[in-house]
Amino acid sequence: MFPALKKPLPTAPEALRSTERNLTIGDRVLPLTVRENSRASRITLRIEPGGRALRLTVPTGLKRTEIDDFLIRHQGWLMTKMAKFPASGHLHHGGFVSLRGVPYQIAHTGMLRGLTEAVMVDGEPVLRVGGLEDHLGRRIAAFLKKQARLDLEPLVARHAATIGRPVRSVTMKDTRSRWGSCSWEGNLSFSWRIVMAPPEVIDYLAAHEVAHLKEMNHGPKFWALCRSLCPATENARKWLKQHGSQLHAIDFS
Image 1 (tube, rainbow, N blue to C red):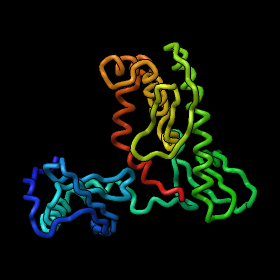
Image 2 (cartoon, one colour):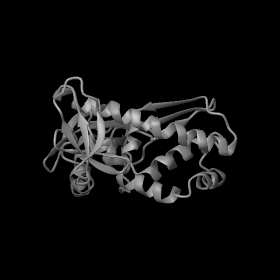
Image 3 (spheres, rainbow, N blue to C red):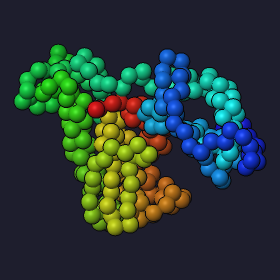
């Protein structure tokens, strides 16, 4: 938690409304968005999922110099946090991408009509990807999205049957703020990036959203239900906290 800064008087000079600029962190240049919030009493700094951008929330009327001083003081903290994100999240031939917790080496076949498939070559996991090299990331994303659905739909059906609640729909999205969601109507949504995580983490996410069909909150009853559906809940939550941002850092564009 960062130290609180006193909210200045509205008449303070050099007041900001909203700005966007770049901030250099070590050898990286990241987009920084500064937003004023009249209810904020201190500066808060957020690293966006995947480490691709920074967001600063500041009290209304805070001086530019105070913001700059804050960023300078927290350069070391930012460098430590950013170290866990790869300098480049782009996928390429010879690189690696995980599937169900297993790293697969990417092999671009060069075949225009070739399918994307996960295979074993000489005992090593390989992801063969056809099509144009410029479309490599998109083809891998489409493959992972399909695999995520293959995993999550049966898990959702099993957990929903256990608690006796219907599921209206299951959709795959590329969300940044959350791994999944559940509506009152029984519509479940998941980030397909979760298929890169180990199987118990995928199972936990399915159990988490299904549990919301009965407990639309994060109270004690919800967590008890979640643990009954997925005994690995605590370990899975820790895994997502430690590694989830790394999955968001991968650039499939």
